Structures are given as C-alpha cells and as structure tokens.
Length: 441
Picture 1: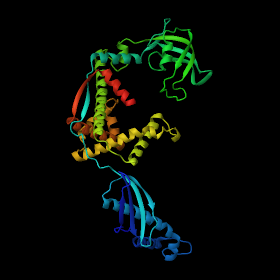
Picture 2 (picture 1 turned 30 degrees about the horizontal axis):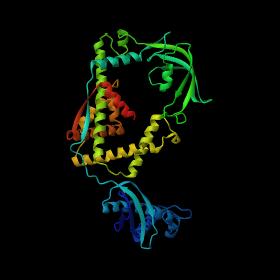
Picture 3 (picture 1 turned 60 degrees about the vertical axis):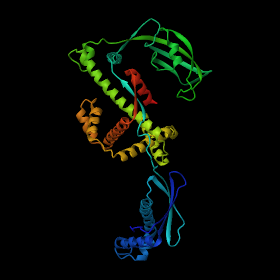
Picture 4 (picture 1 turned 180 degrees about the vertical axis):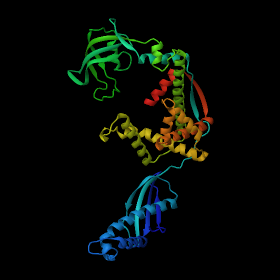
C-alpha cells in the first residue's frame, strides 16, 4: 500500500469530545497503487480465452478495476486516518463514521467524525471522605446461621391452631379487579410461608389467623411499584380457600444433622468452625466490594467528567447482554430497554477512565502475588480448589477479570491510604443486609 505520506488534515471540534476531521490524499498516490495492484493481478489472472499471465492490461482493468479501486480507497482511508490522528495527536474513542466527499482531480477527500477520550485532571486524590463499616462475627451470628441450616432441612407439620408468621399456609385463590379476572390472579394448592415476602403485604396479612378449612374474602391493593404494570396500584378482591396450616419443625443439632455437613464424629464445634470460616469469607468479600464501591464513588464525585457516547453505548451493550444472560433469554426482543442501563453504564465508564488515569499517573503495576491470593479466595468453596484454580488459569477471559479486580483493589487501597476514613460499627446482619440491598438495587 502507498505510504499516504502527503495527507492534508483539518480538524473541527463541534462538541467537547466530538471531532470532525477532513482528510485529503493526493490522487496520484491512489492511482499509482491501483496501477501496481492491477499489474500484479495480470500475473495470476485467469480469464476465459487467455493464457495465465497473458491477459491484456486493458482487459484486467476493465474486469477488475472497480473492485481494486474500492479496495485501495478502503486501505487509503484506514492508513491515512491512522496517520492523521497520530499527526494531530488525537485519541479516538470508538470507530469513526466516514463520509466520502466530492473529490477534485488532484485529491481524494473524506470526513471522519468521531469522539476522543476526555483530558482528565485528577482531583480528590487526597482526602476523600470515606465511611468504612466495622463488622465482627459474634457467637449469636453463628447460632443464627446454624438455625438457617436447620431451616434448610426442616419439615412441616399440620396444626389446628390459627396461622402465625413463619407458618406455611396452603390455599386456593381467585382474584378479580372489579368483575374481571386477571392473569396470575388464580392459584391451586399454593404454599405460602407467612411473613417471608413471598406474596404482597395485603395478601400475606389476610392469611394471618386463618385455620385449615377456612374460606375468606380479602381486599388487596397492589403496590405502586408492582412489577406487572397493569396491576400496579390497583385494588383487587380475592376469594381464598385454606387447605392446610403447617408449622415448621427444625431438626435437632444431633449426629444425623452433623453428618449432612460432613462431620462424622458428632463434634458441634467443628460445625461452628466451618460456619465461621464460610461467614468470614463471605464477609471479607462483601467488605472488599463495599470498600471498592464507596471509595470509587467518592473518587467519581470529586472528578465529574464527560464521557464519549461511544463508550457508554458499548457499556450498555454489555449490561444488557448480562441482564439477558441472567434471565436466560436469547430473543433480542426480550432484552430489557437500553435506557434502563444508561445511568449505570455512564457511571461505570467514568469510573473506569478515572481508574485508568490514576494507574497511569501512579505507574501502578499488577501485583501477581495478590492475583494468586485472589484465586485462592475464589476457589476455596470448591470441592477441589486446586483443580478450580487451574480452570481459571486456562481461561484468559476469567483471568483478565481476576487481574482487573486485583488492580482495582490496589487502586482502592492507595486512595484509602490518603482518604479521611470514618469507621461505622455494624452488626453482621445489618451489614450483610445493606450489602445485599445495594447489590440488588
């Protein structure tokens, strides 16, 4: 390909990050390249009626000239654009939109429209205000976790008394809004654990105090934020028939119970130790995630920057694809609306750009020993941690995620060292509940 050394470039800035660049390339460079390629084609061209290598130049030009010109112009645009952005010291964010212009005899011209990365002047590196939870796992927290394990192996026993929170009530129901039935408003033999949040508040409240064999009518109002738009904020009437009321029976913490968790010698302290290890591992991971979020959010608040739309759109693509993966959806028409991800995508891009700038200015390098520590943490819950770690190492995409998380941890630690950190004591339940709400929100 010709060098496209003699390009003429002019750049306009219609927006903060948008650039409109016009590039002019001498036509004689393009024609020389077309002639050179057609000449090479003569050596190998196979056309009916001609021996290989003997096809006349005019026939080759007539047969292949349009295709070769198109290929050369495509190459000219690619190479001249690269040379032009180097010459103008521009850093494009995303691919350019190319508009061929009416060319003169002596020049081929096109316009490239693209965005550039913002110039970032880091602020708030010193003295960020950060709140850090201080959480310790108490014996009562371990007791509560063992009760949850017991609940996972619980049985249900029918009772004749009135239903109370924690009981399981099995019902038939039919709901109407006005005189009209609605989708999802009917159920048969539906088990509902009272107070579990399984059904909306008014329906749950109507079941408190019922007995086996009862029939009742319940007036229910759907919450304004109910996910089914046609029902949100509306009032309905349900006819309810109660089949059973059952109470939960928790298993005793005996040898049989302990065996379910791989403890054969009946040592309850061994179970408590296992539970504590798992709780501590989860707590440490949540604290790490919480610290990252808090510090990076504070860093962003101190450095509000404009981001290229191209990068935001790419991040929306990623978040939308992740949402579809979690939903198990393949049909693009089932994809959640792109605008739902716009704010989160823009925020993620801003934080990413700030982190990259901070890394560059600090000369920060990936700590390989911490990558190994992170792998140990990630694979500890597996039955064979060594084998799981090998699977990670053999997958470049997974390892890139691990390395990215480690670098981010390093950035957060450096920022935290310079921050004004305020501790806030929290119980295990308080903190884990807050963390779960933040993740789901």
